[in-house]
Length: 213
Image (tube, rainbow, N blue to C red):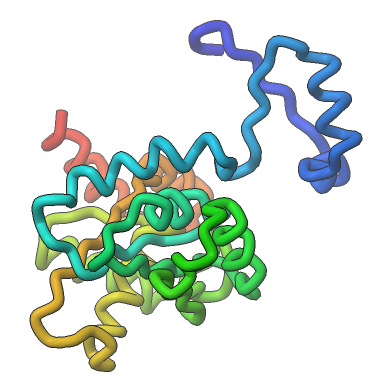
């Protein structure tokens, strides 16, 4: 593998143990010099890096910064560094995600910041890693309008939610809203190969890569 990396595949049964402390202890004993990163990268150390995003927004008087949420680390990092006039809107991309909100607040460990967090469910489009023709249509329309590419796992669900909330009058008129695109575009080719995305997205994605190179 590239850069000397070795991938070790595990069974679904083993994968279910990823949060089990006994399993993690065994991993640490087997690889004593390893840095064990939780699934999704969500841990106290992640907050510092994510918080740097807020520094870029300091001069712009942002009212809302919106982010997709998978494991909660990005939301927690933004919340930990939010400015007094900025609210964080977190859009979970999986079903039954209510358990994530207290985990996010525990990571931040500042109870008074809860009022600055809007955790809005209902935009998962079937669950994590799932999407619908409606969402794919939104992605294509978004690209045609803004020349910004989204992917259906994270960023598109967040963007769809924000546009829907705007239509509902969720934000006061004149609000300065920032949408945080958290990446994930490298996963498009895999979704195309698995025939989970339309075939014509191949040329669309390749053209975008060629333009950016």
